[in-house]
Image 1: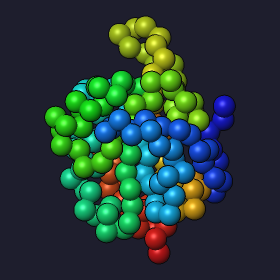
Image 2: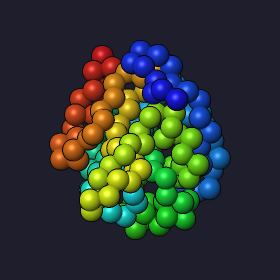
Image 3: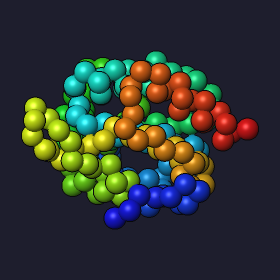
Length: 157
């Protein structure tokens, strides 16, 4: 499956979010949505990224923007991660990789000299109409949330 193209509607994928809520991406229409993918719950980079989004949550909310984090972790792992770090947004347990595949974020990566399938840290900005407005792939955590917030402000102009 190919990733959604800029300016085109994103696929409506069914998702399971923290709180054991079965919903879909379409349920988030009407407001901008930041959908970010991270490799693994409770790891250093992923924790920092989530904490950075949480620290800026009031700024995103002032822009009417929603945030969702996603990884292939189980719902239990996502619940524990969200609770332990006090994230101010829900996390998606994409255990069947349907959301990851829809956004083409699973890549071959080198880990300790071995090739493994894993999530490439990526963020997608979806507008209120469900269209992809911006994407960041191969994200470096430091400063990333500021870049995303600037893009949200830009689409709200």
